[in-house]
Length: 602
Image 1 (cartoon, rainbow, N blue to C red):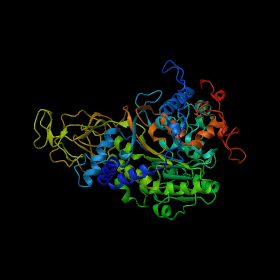
Image 2: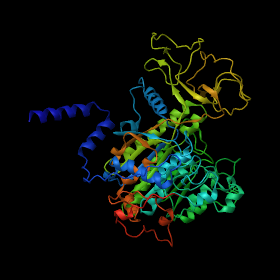
Image 3: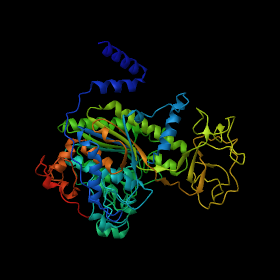
Image 4: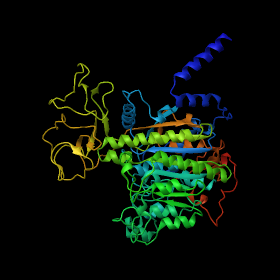
């Protein structure tokens, strides 16, 4: 008795010492009902192949299923799934953003945590594409959306089709988790700060041999003639139900005809050459659907209506610049809250089957490409606020939330700054482990330097056609680089200014992605499968296997093994809507060993 009393007292003291949101989460976890026990599936046999030559879409699918199943993903009982993707959100970006947010709160910063860093389950994602050591967003999000790794530059098609190969792409589409969810009766949503037709959101609903075919004007003649469709058109014409119930982001130029003026900018028009207004076609297809292009319309949209929000002709504003937008833009957290509320309503109205949602902080990547750490970090903080909003709006009992990045960047965190040194500032401290920190640290030539810098990019300090030698200022379109004669003197430069561009070692017009692993953080049913190092396509399989409604839909199509684990690559045609009937394939709920089809090439 004394032991139990002491233990209860200790737990009370621990919870009382936690931040409020952590304490509440801890209490909810302690009182949550335990999941129904299920027997662990047997190990899934994955054929040994020569790599990379023997890799196929079917092999990738089975291998990803094995990784998720051996970690116990099928023990999850998730009703809802939310995938957060910080585009280009390297581990260095996470660390720097954590410190920046903490310092904005008056803390030293290092001890702070972003919202998802309180999640109990973590792992690493290996991001390479099938043809590229350092990946791009199209191939990486395709892996997370379909369970199959593929080439750089393509959206949700098998690696058998090369980039730009229209005929090959038409023969090799990969069913996405969002398409499967729509056909299984779940509500779906896609939220981003980029164009809604950009690589990451596009991979949830489009199948394209080129990520740049966002509207018909961007497609070559041969692609039109071969029967390929642009990405915006694929969103509107999806054969998987009516497509996402909530679509929020930028990119309305890809949906409007070139003859139509943009509603926000008098000097801009739509980009489509086929004369089609896809926003009007979406409304015609979605009875009662609401289209919004500004925050006032967004705020006024009823919760029980499908919602299409396109807030910019191209990408949405960076979080730092959002307040200056003439039409008004919602924040990523605003869009997340609205999306969840609508999907919850849609789910309840259609039988309570749940929902699948993507939320992308897409402009982290763009700021890195531009060599501007300030905007990259503030957009990362905005993503953290969105994750916090989702955590508050959902329960860990039935909602699996997974946070990750599609790839890394070359941002570096270096020097020996003292504790609490401004993360965007110059290093105050020492330049070596054997010296005492005193004032600004200097390099071997006596120049100060910043904690953050890039391995390559437009922040190279040599002269260009647009600027003299020295520090660069955002935004900077650079060409005609010349060799730098020396590093600049930063003594009088405000490196914490939002427009300061961090120095880059190698001169490039755009900073590149990095090939290093990125983090995965998860909470909710099935989240315990997130551990260790995972191939990126295994993320799809964790989300799938942890959601019984989605697994059942694939087992009904005889794609599962005897343990009810989907191991065979789905054929998209099987799940497409025909004749207005939204039913899943026959044999619903059945599974046996005979359906574990052999791994075939594709």
